[in-house]
Image (cartoon, rainbow, N blue to C red; front, top):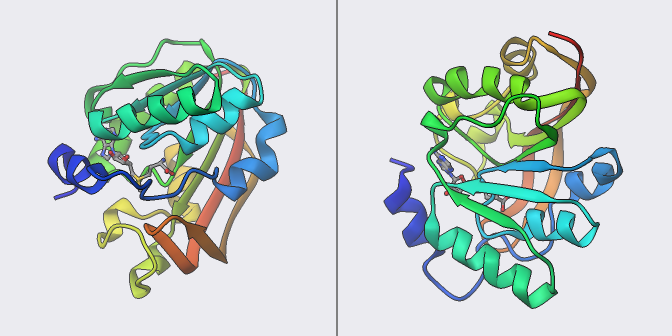
Amino acid sequence: MYDQKFWNERYARDEYLYGTNPNSFLVEHAELLTSPVLSLSEGEGRNAVYLALRGLKVHAVDISEVGLAKAQALAKLKGVEIQTEVADLSNYKPKKNYHGSVISISAHLPSAIRNKLYPLIEQCLKLDGILLLEAYSENQLARNTGGPKDADMLMTVDKLKREFPNLEPILMRELEREVREGEGHVGMASVVQFIARKKSM
Ligand SMILES: C[S@@+](CC[C@H](N)C(=O)[O-])C[C@H]1O[C@@H](n2cnc3c(N)ncnc32)[C@H](O)[C@@H]1O
């Protein structure tokens, strides 16, 4: 259901669906991140451009070429460079021991994809590299303020612990917070937030 066609159609308009301001959880903890940053499901570029403005080198991956074209337009407007790659995370192979950080902001994926991808995300981080993730939690299903209507794509703290066994959590919590990101994410929401560091595997 949430396939490439779905996302290309969602992004096919001048406005930025999730706005052009970065995600606030990312902003709060951006000082922990080092280059090169891999951004999973970057969409229209708001987070990659923010990190590039902070001087970080960002490689942004998304299945939607329409979203990533808007990401490049936003980067140009702000006078920074970002690398973008149209790719399906179901068969994405990041470089091993290469990234200083990985960000995953509202990158909701079915468990069948996560089960293949997340071990590769652990491997792609350098020692002491950081993963920063925010996603809607399963409790978001009861709300109409954003996120997929599929519990399998939504996260819990238990899923995070299980799916990233080789990362050491620095922050791991579920909370309710007001999310205002363009028209796409609007209102009180149930989210999980996760920051973890790679220790030797
Ligand atoms: C809710 S949007 C979040 C976009 C962006 N991270 C943000 O916070 O503004 C989800 C994104 O996941 C991307 N996506 C969905 N399935 C994907 C897949 N299999 N591989 C890569 N990207 C995917 C969509 O194209 C979309 O940009």
